Amino acid sequence: MPRQVDYYFSIQSPWAYIGHQAFRGLVSAYDLKVNHKPVVLVDLFSETGGLPLMKRHPVRQRYRMVELQRWRDKRGLKFNLQPAHWPFNAQLADGVVIAALEIGLDPDRYLRRAFAGVWEDQLNLADPATIAKLADESGLPGKQLVERSGSEDITAAYEQNRQEALAADVFGSPVYVLDGEVFWGQDRIELLEDALKSGRAAYSSKV
Image (cartoon, rainbow, N blue to C red; front, side):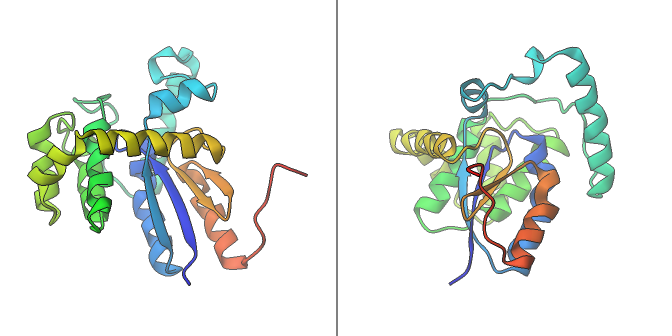
């Protein structure tokens, strides 16, 4: 049986975008099963003591810009630090992932295209037509998934992911949960690999 990782993220998260390719490298190298769990970040932040970007102290906002540049270089990416259509309401774009999973489709190609759409191509991923086009380009039935994304069932699944995130001690994006151990942030991917490589038991906050 392959090991499983619960992957909590939102398409509007720059850190999920920055870490996605490296994470998928681990998925391939260690034959992991990924449980994709898109979450509403603003709600998750507010319930776990975090703040939306524009409400953070200017010192933190400035440091974020430095970190984006560092990790852009580190991961070998080329993207806009302040894309034209960010921030945006990611519920429809995230919901396409849930809708794809619902009918047994792998959302990874769509995720790669959607992340790049926001940060590299400066597309508006709050626009249903844009999302459908990206899904189509990824080999998914875009129109069908966008229509399904707005349904009550998908909205309920999105909310369920948030509840599961809180129960798992998840408070941001991206978070990778392996055997109950939380790895918060794309800068923890190397630590996730260490855990996979060693086969050690999961660390716990209960000591």
